Image (cartoon, rainbow, N blue to C red; front, side, top):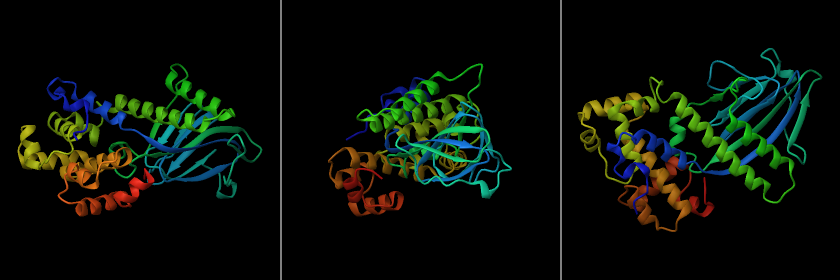
Length: 323
């Protein structure tokens, strides 16, 4: 069955294919679980955290410094700032860069209202922290597109209403004892993530000099990306893609790899496995059908590729209905 996509309806010639592809990626965002807690920390303090999925932090009051493994420069968060780590990982948050390891606090639990308190006797910093597990985490196209850190500053003169409204609603649900509060928070987290990713696209689409967004801006590579996202199940080859975007095979392969950071067919494999994971999670289609749709000649070849990317077999993934 052909996957419905806004880029597969003839819009590639309308001049709107970039916007259509952004919309397609935003629609693909699905969270399978969230964990939230709030902190009230008095200086001096520091927290070491590690997230398996995406992580986010919102500075509700005060300021702090965020240091992410693999990123050279620390980031200062002021009240109202919002930061997302799309791929999670180890990171350190502390009140000041001079705070020593002896002042680190251990966050090993929170109270009934999901609040955690600690630190010394100095000024208070309040954070809202969380981890988000994306469905299809290992193959989600967004993880290959987004940088390791998204930082949204909240300028006093021009606040972001979408952030304020979503955060206030999350706080309201966390403070309530109403049935289904956790489910509501998960949906709000999904909304928060989608809004943040959309803001990133809008702010960077015309400025990145390298990476996926730069490739999308290129009239040849961008159309190739749109074609692959629209119909990942098609038997694309480097030659067929190069023909469709009117460049030579060698130029297409070299430029795609240079901008996107991986060869075209490896990128396509990720798209196909992501699509297959979605079908495993949301349909009862046979493995043979899903393997064929993903471009594999046999269930065995599909299962091998799926396990290599997802860390589990298609059957086990379907049984668990998620990563």
